Image (cartoon, rainbow, N blue to C red):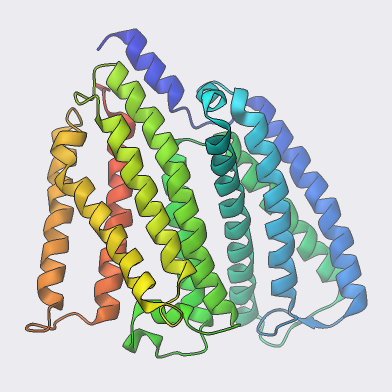
Length: 361
């Protein structure tokens, strides 16, 4: 591959925010910090000794809600302004409906991640300062800091969105969301039943976190597919990927996987077990199709990728064997967590190799 092809691919995968984006992120943080200070002042004045976390009206809930709203605004503005950055121009050629879904998923996931991260942070803070009330002064300081950091981090994230950043965002979001649901669930023995039991507690925050994480993550996977399609088309045009049908087929499989993942959260197991199980099975099937069809879809990627891919497939087969009733080594919860981890672990590996395909360094 010649130098021009390599440079084109590098430009398409640039993940560093520009000087303008860095400046705008600081202004966004300052603006959000001012809003947060006013918000914290009002909150502290209404209830001057509000508990940090653990209550329905705790500071953690209000701070997480504020962080989520600020993140939604910052991600909307930042992602829209970044569409003309080098390497992002291709977004302007997307059909209107796809651009809307693309933007909506980025905004929803950043808002949800900001909410979950802020809530989890204050839950940890509450464990370190048990019984500490939040007086008005600290309400102002902590709310300004929380909202300012949320705006700054989110604005920088959406200003340099690439396929690799998208996959990292997705993994971080799913990990934080599910772990927070685990530690806030009203049933400490949830793991003795199954993983999806986390989403069965009606009107409980842990279930909203668990099901909401799956729905938002599924939406993000559909946007992730748009970025994968762009990268694969660039690699196919540069002669790196040898199958011209791959850039058309693979994104469709990812979209189906994302829809199935969202449906797992839309249909909790206690609401519609059939739809829940079919959605989870459909996601697993798409994963297997991508693994088994890899040598055809991704022909041209480094050989190491295929070694890793077959390793993931072997791990799935072994997990199934150890789960079957005749052996019963794995519980249902362990099996679900392992397969879930394998799916998103493979996505991380796939994106890493997609990002270095065609390079000779």
